[in-house]
Length: 229
Image (tube, rainbow, N blue to C red; front, top):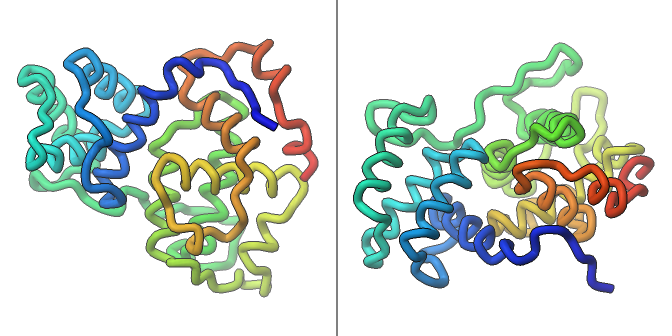
């Protein structure tokens, strides 16, 4: 069954933006096509809205060698904003982007990829319901999972990450996030703690990419099992 979501006519533009992020993170060498001057501006505006200006500019720089260049004035502004970002230090983009996640609720080391991933997914879920989630958060999680390469040590109480995520109201959301990581950032499936679920992932991604949440669309299309599973 094909699920329909709002804003489908602009998904091709979003796909180009996802490709730019994949170039920036080393998941892709080049875009599938060269953006028009107007599309470069849209890519920049999307990066700003999703709080990914600095990492997206890294993709812009990598595209130079393929002859794909943003309009000069835009490129200068983009570079200036990227270098003013806290993601830059001494003129270089610092990777991974994710800062240490702190929590008093876990006895585990906060530097553990297991704890980092669990807390990030929970934070992403909270921000999603408040319509404050963005792709910068997804990038943070991407780098954590990429660093772990599918190897997640148990929590202090012996619980595995997979079991910690299989909780009511969290599991299907987490699976949707895995699909988003696959769709937006081409994360290797073997690095994911749960199997991706497309329906939940498409719904969450559609909402994140929209500039304004349309309540009627949100309610009509909400995957209600995501609340209990």
